[in-house]
Image (cartoon, rainbow, N blue to C red):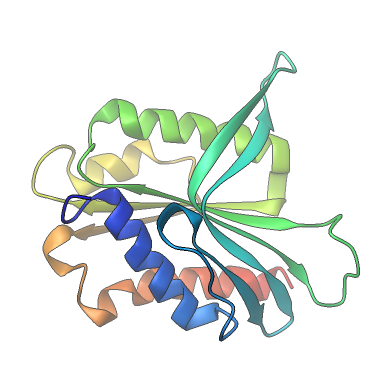
Length: 176
């Protein structure tokens, strides 16, 4: 894996999220097979790397979208999984061309049509001083509920992820 690849950034974000909202001792797997359990306040669930979620197209065909990071959760008070909620996190880095953002926005539009208020979409853009600027990428990603853009030189600074983790924690609390 190349230094600073989307896989490395996904793994870093998974570690940050685990430290913020993961159930201690629940981490399993590595890389694209990483996952952990969530037990945050009144919310329980799981967080996965590279997990698919199906959505319907207007012609009733079904496509699958593989989120870079996917939270699946519900309130502790619910005994079944009939009201699962999701946070789908997309990560863009070195493949930062317009079409990559447009295709992720297309998927998010259709995920929202399928899941409605049960899904919260987040785009993480780690800008490497080439490709789309952060403001331009944010414009294209209007379908996402939260856009998080940072420069690649700052990804290892501990506080840089606080805005992202705060947005996730707020959503988890609102939906429990």
